[in-house]
Amino acid sequence: MEPGTLLYDTATDQVGEYRDQSGPYAMLRPVGGGREWQAHPSTLRPATDRERLSAGVRAANDRTWAVPPDPEDLSRPPWPVPGCAECTHLDDRRETARAAHDHSAATDANVLLRQHQRAEHP
Image 1 (cartoon, rainbow, N blue to C red):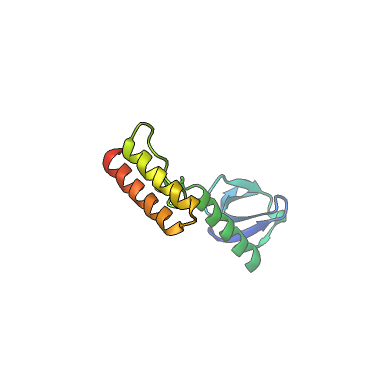
Image 2: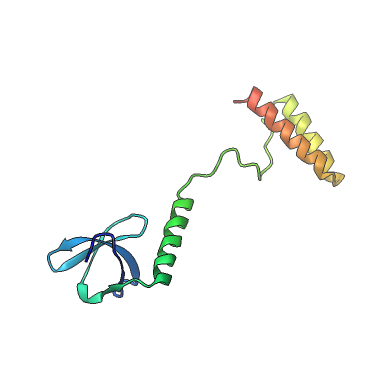
């Protein structure tokens, strides 16, 4: 077997990248990295295209979830800083717009509140 070959281990129900031989066992590593495991050669077979694709998608998803959340997440409205008159004013402006179902004005208030917080509350 060539290093880098993708194999399916029927004993663990996993696709792994062949790394090397260790005694009578094959050393496999998960697609995308991770802890290697030993597999008996009798439980290995070449991975199908579907198994390779599935393992690649799983590795990509694992990398995605490993990324910490963005502190500048624009999908959530900003919170006013307690004790700040300008933050309170902009929060009141946003709540008034929400009560009137004026989504454009509520978005404007969010933008102004974020700009104020960047400038005054780093």
